[in-house]
Length: 321
Image (cartoon, rainbow, N blue to C red):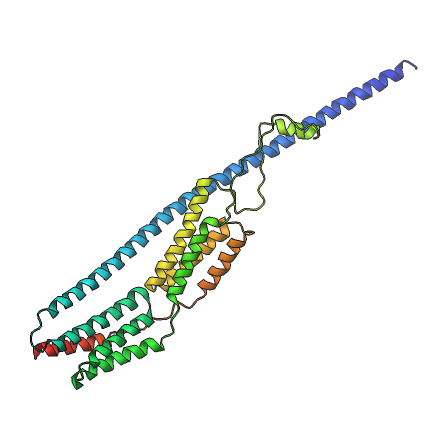
């Protein structure tokens, strides 16, 4: 009986050691499986992010082409107006006797035409009204009852512009330009290189030592977005935001309310999806865009042209005479 007890204790100790080894192996297996699942999930998310970046890059290229085309169209219109004014000036050199009367009519016509172009290109009703007033003052120098119908038509156009409810388009364009200057300062979540340790920390537990020696690196990201971005991806996201703000500026200058609204929504979506919400500058830009998106830019711009038509009729009558 005395010899059997040590043997039983040895057997119990051996079984306990085997059970401990089995538990450790099972824990290692479970940790490895979990690590592989996390690695697979992160790899899938990164692949999806690459597809989104490619889509954003294509959309940005398309928007830039549209902006260039619109700017080219504006330049052509301004060039056409300049050529017309040059022709009018050249016609003045051919004026013979009594030429001052025709000169004043041509000057009034050029001012009325410029007012219409200014309203169409920049939506600046106040500037257009000043040009119409200058045209009326030019006709007033003739001191002739024959110009009263043209002056009456100019007065009607000026009243239309005065009564129209206008948005400070130029102020909004400048404000969007200021927001574009802040895009480079906004915080974007970026990938950080994992710290490498040549030797395990002597104060950490054996379990952490085992995890540090595993060939799998596990990173955990709380939440779906925004994901950490590489330097190139962050640059593309900033470029996308800048492109949306530029589109909003162009839409304002062209009086396209729906295009302006869509550009503001695109900028807000980009901010919400890719930029850090805890950054004060991001929050400020979100609130600014929300306020600007609610501005009433959809009102119909006043239609003028009565004065220009009346002046052209007066010019034809002078030519027939």
